[in-house]
Length: 499
Image 1: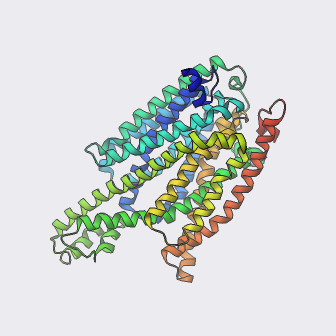
Image 2: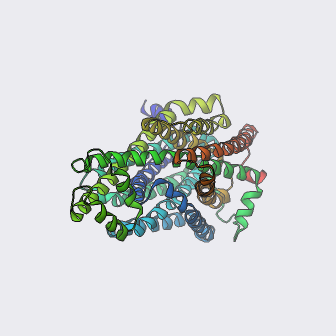
Image 3: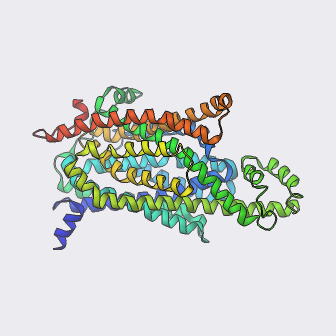
């Protein structure tokens, strides 16, 4: 009875259940570890910068992402893939422990370095983990099991976000990176167990040679562009990154200002009950310490506080704002996960069974098109949060599960060499495109057309809708090739090699 119930829950047949369960928990602990880092990264960034400053960091992020992916690819084929995964995970865990020691004393520049690292490392380790999972399961097995396996990532999202929210308001708020390191170590151990079990039960899909030809230098980038199936995957990831970044610019701006105003009212209630000096205090975070000190000297008399008192009050404001912002992001991420659980447990199998993959993967771009249009109009903050929750829930559940299914009929070179490029530099290229458009709008069109902040975001979203069309075309063509390959007798393998 229990075996039948477990098979009904996971979709895994006998012999597949343990690898599916171990893969589930490996994703759970990796996502838990990341959602302890992500709210911390965002809240620390907003401690020193405003949300639109993210655009200036997009170029170094893509360069770092490309460098890390190329460095990883250099060792693919030279070091056994599972040992290479272990080394990569160990290096990232060491970085977390280093930041754990340095962030309390690092200040503005330490926050910048942490923001850049935290924006790069996870795409690499997640693509490696999914590459291993894609090796364990065949396409037919993946269609049965990946809804359950991806559920682990969604539950990890929820657990990490909830733990992050609790830590932000506790005496352990500075321990987030330690817990994140432990979670990442558990993920590594579990996936290695899944590999061992999978190799014992699989004799076809997972047993491909590790000596397969691997492109060197820049050949992998040219091969990615020249292969129709792989290019479709890259276009999907690129367009998603671009439109989600455009939505994020508009949404985060409202969250930032709303949180800052709420904390200001609580912290400065006695000296400024009407909030007349909110904008001046809000703008201080963009200044270095010397200029902050000068401004505090000037504002002290207006707020009826000595410079020393105002400096102490401002420090309480900054600390409280970081905690509140981290809690806001943590709550959004947690509800994204809860929605993702519902979609994977209740919706995914029915959609895969009756619609087919290419129809399921159309859902997210259509939602982002609607979200972009909605954000072109003034919305309450709760409505903005709902859009973020629905978009994130769809992305981390249905979209991730369907995207990973598209990798299962590809060669090992795609899963271990092209995939880190697609999930890293190509995705970051979408972020860069959105950021460059944002900077162009802010620096030129906003001046010529006298556009306010909200109108600038609206114009960016309007441009982003054009990329949603590219996304839809790429999804349709790639999903059609996948469905056709799985309907053939026998199903096509190494689909990227036949593209």
